[in-house]
Image 1 (spheres, rainbow, N blue to C red):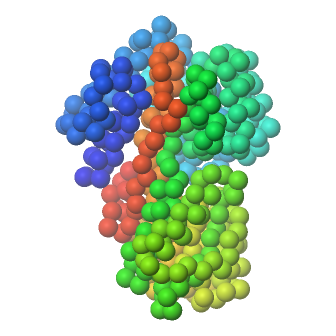
Image 2 (image 1 turned 180 degrees about the vertical axis):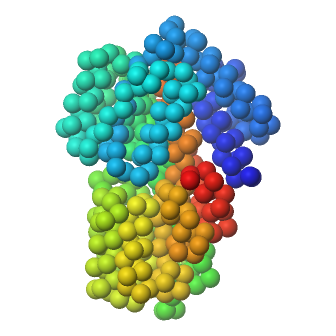
Amino acid sequence: MKLFKKLMALSVASICAISLAACGGSKPAETTAASSEAKEESKAAESVSEAVAATGKDAKDIKVGISIYKFDDNFMTLYRNELVRYLTEEVGIPAENVVVQDGKNDQAEQTNQINNFIATKVDVMILNLVQSSSAPTVTDLAKEAGIPVVYINREPDEAEESRWAADGIKATYVGADARQSGTFQGEEIAELANKGDINGDGTVKYIMIQGDPENIDAQYRTEYSVKALTEKSGLKAEELLIQRGDWDQAKGQQIAQDALTQYGTDVEVIFCNNDAMALGALQAISAAGRKVGEDIYIVGVDALAEAVQNVSEDKMTGTVFNDFISQAQAAAKAAVSFTKGEKVDTKIPVDYVKVTKENAAEILELVK
């Protein structure tokens, strides 16, 4: 399918862009992505093989320590499964050398795991931090131990990333720009026939179910969704409620239920920082006797299979594909490049993809 081919091409381009030497030259990513699919796949496989061969040790000797902020996050489950698959099946690292830990949404617990990785002398760490604000401390621990770090999904702040570049610290962030995901959410509402203004009064009244307000992704998705809605639609937006849902489906359901009880038909749009909370909110919408697409709209982020299926059936207005496939593969490739001793960029971006009814079936093929 066209979208699948496009995403695979982007994935290959992103992977190759991490290490130009491993891809055989300084050819721009755009040019690589435009070549034939067979050639792209061949280059991707060769680049991994070449990178591993040049490490000075066999793939079977590379040790990777991975800590995920919590295992029961739907999106990060997809992400870590693809990450482990790629490291073991494509790179060839033995499964027993890829240690994956559950941070249990507890930064102290995760820090202990990181210290254990250091004590066992892993070659590289891939970290999805519980608190992105802990990155400076974690980076210093890793630097002192001489272990490179690939941060994923939760981005450290710009000052921290600038420090890596200025001080030559072996650390990078692989992820998508959350501002883009928020923008896409706002555009999905603004592109509706009524621009989300169900009662036609010129103001879109919404509730915002936020993830963790200290998380930069939650901050950007919250800000840019509303910004894009007002800029693209030309309408005003009125916030009825913003509440923390901690990325959790049950909390999303409770917040939406309470808001619908309090504000009733005044609620025209429900913005959710992720799909798990959106799925919970959808349960509350149904229980309240409301119907998406007729008297309320709802958007999420991540493109979980259930959410994408709902979009295809007009049960959700839209979501945004947080491309875990390309991100996981780029993170794995960055980790291998570090063990090779290559220079790795301090930030490796991967684009989001807007998901509406028009392309939901194609996205579903990627995520189901």
